[in-house]
Image 1 (cartoon, rainbow, N blue to C red):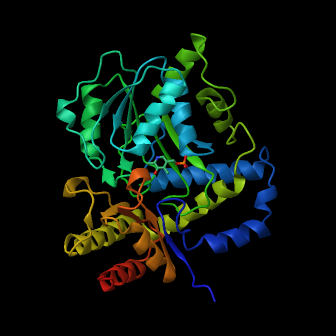
Image 2 (cartoon, helix red, strand yellow):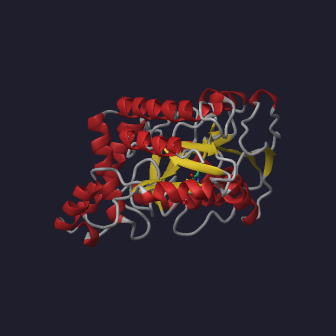
Length: 362
Ligand SMILES: *Cc1c(COP(=O)(O)O)cnc(C)c1O
């Protein structure tokens, strides 16, 4: 008989424990067949956005839009907020992707790039005056580096007229964002929320909408059905421009309900505790070590461990016990383990993983 698997992969990941129950209810209530222009859908849409606002403390200055993925969010942000110049903080593959998307859309992005696994000295960064948008990846899933939010807020104070877009894909809702400093933020359901993949959430303030309007007025292409103005028009009716992933929007609302009952404070505390345990374990391990040396930069939600060239072997061994973890990103495939530490991951299972690794001394 096959062992029951637990997915510690960084995305898609283990589903939130209440998902099977909500799936059943969704089928009973015919959610997958729900008409996306009807009152029932509008209620569902409103409930999910309200729950997200409560859970993540999203103020009314910001709108919440539903898209297909976070890469789509990157594309929409560039299209709607950049005529020419975006500025990108690159320290891994996802931050680089944001930059590449700007290039592909024929903008003229600029960047500061630091080595994989590093953070930035924000005090030394000089952003060109012409910059329209600053793009940052709060939690670099590829390297396991999380930036400091206060330092990002400082950036906003230093460049108040420049828009800031923050990728919070592999940290929301763990990341406690003060939205008064952030114009746009986005995430996907399949990371910390433990949802089936295929839902992107984009949070956009009125300044970003105004910029999209300005670009449209200048006859610049801001996209077709999924531009900020069409999103906003439909959002006013609690609808989406296209037929959306209704089931995932429903499940997101339900998982938010469960997280609200549990309490976001407790969820954050548990993640911190689990992360401390894992980092402590590997700091003391005789040969495998946390890849990010600077403790301040260590991500709590996506933990990267340098295992020399043993990643494939360890991944196979964990799999035998039913634990699925990610190997390193691209060129680090065989050097790194990436272990997700999301709300769906029980402490007891994390302890088992470390136990299996400590028994493996050969
Ligand atoms: C997973 C991930 C993305 C991409 O999300 P998709 O839903 O696959 O588009 C972007 N940024 C970060 C930091 C991620 O971890």
